[in-house]
Length: 500
Image (cartoon, rainbow, N blue to C red; front, side, top):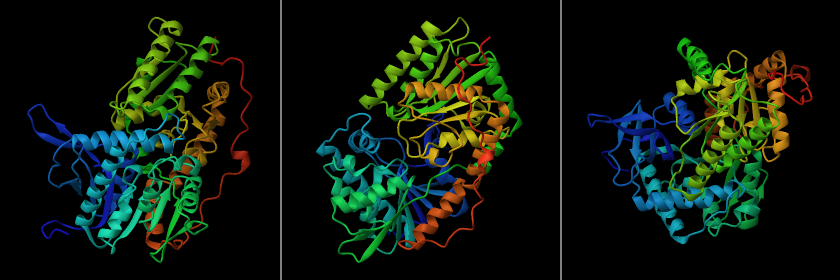
């Protein structure tokens, strides 16, 4: 620990800092809150207690000096252009990401990428060790930093170490393909507690330790050979800031903007919305295929029905993402060219990121929210949509392959690989009577309200403090709604009622 640097009892380590650097027209540097689920979730945690956040500032080269922003001490970690290419774009997003998402696209294995991943993880661990107070709680985030727990334990055996995986953890049959599988598992076992989005992910990790390391396991615990300690792995699904987001969605200017959005689109009878990072895991191509077929079959069509697809730019220097963008934009062009009308395109495609106020207005404006990933750890968009619908309007179409589906069972569930099934689910979401959809939305909102981000953080930190033992049980949860509160879904019509 450096004597001239402050230290903190809570240290968050994540690939990125929770702020983005903005250079104003007059050359001044400003730091603004970053978009994204992780930042939104962790910001709520950091507001309740002082702490430090270790992460990359977003620019290749030397890191800025540590600074404070909105009451959080930010400790930037430098990444060179080579680090960005090999550690981030390479190993994290072209090796680990495909393996952890069911190899939707093939993974690439390069030894120089692995070497860079090791170097950067060491750098993060050293930064954490520098800002952690004696006996501090260290909370490491996500797949980019899987070696950090063991590295921090080696540097600072006095601290309590947790790690949370925001994406799926793959079955051992997929994880075993990684040439560096042993090192990754050993790195994670440096933690006291490992948190996952789904119980299946925790079980996948424990099974990998048993089969690939020969570790002794019992239920949710792994015994670390030679260290006389156990590591607990369990599911603690992440959530959203329900109170803050609902308050935002209730603002008069946000509700007025929602009406303005609908008017600008020609006041369609049904506005469908997709909001995704531009990623091959999100199922955007499958969603467009289902919509294109519904249009071609004249079961929906503009101007009565329209789709807004927001695709936030992502990893644009990775080949798979560049190809995906080109394919999606070509598909949108074909749909609008063949099935749109003058002044009424079938798809409004927006390749931008938007501030929270605009996203809340879009959620309020949308009659049907399409959340159809092929594989997703959680997908907070589903919970954000539900949170914003204080009017009990709207309908959520939700992929069974998201972590959110395990909590939001009342949603209109779909298998996005099944195009015909996805089409029928979209039609049910459109045609289910408004009274029944309100009842469904009420149940969904109750679940998200009861399990918000503050509760997620409290549960995680309690589990970390108690590990490897179970934490003190929480108060009894509100009972699950009775069966009659969730209506039986009607069989789909051959056409939507919005067509004349």
